[in-house]
Length: 118
Ligand SMILES: [Zn+2]
Picture 1 (tube, rainbow, N blue to C red):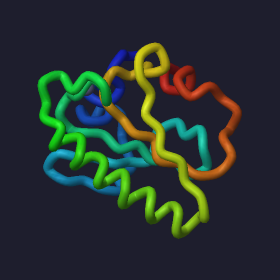
Picture 2 (cartoon, rainbow, N blue to C red; picture 1 turned 60 degrees about the vertical axis):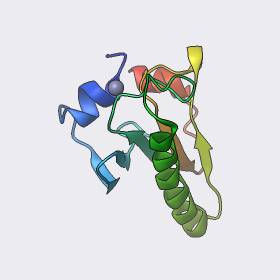
Picture 3 (cartoon, rainbow, N blue to C red; picture 1 turned 120 degrees about the vertical axis):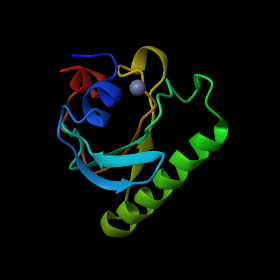
């Protein structure tokens, strides 16, 4: 598949997504191939390459994304009693568009990035 699932598939509408939150700058949706029972992805709509490479975008945009991560994580923590927040960098990051995984439950035993690539 593509190196940027988010611009090429999710934001373009090519792959249908189940949104949980949307603002002018931020989108959150259920992962299309979840590897945890509860698995939401939060992304900036603008193309930001990663947490350590903002691609010229301001840190204010990252703060906005994180505020959404925080709210969704709080809901999951409240409803499920536990939550994890994760973003990958470098070789660990397959899709080169900043995205935060917000998830709960035991993983399905599949490598996180390999799953994204499929
Ligand atoms: Zn992108």
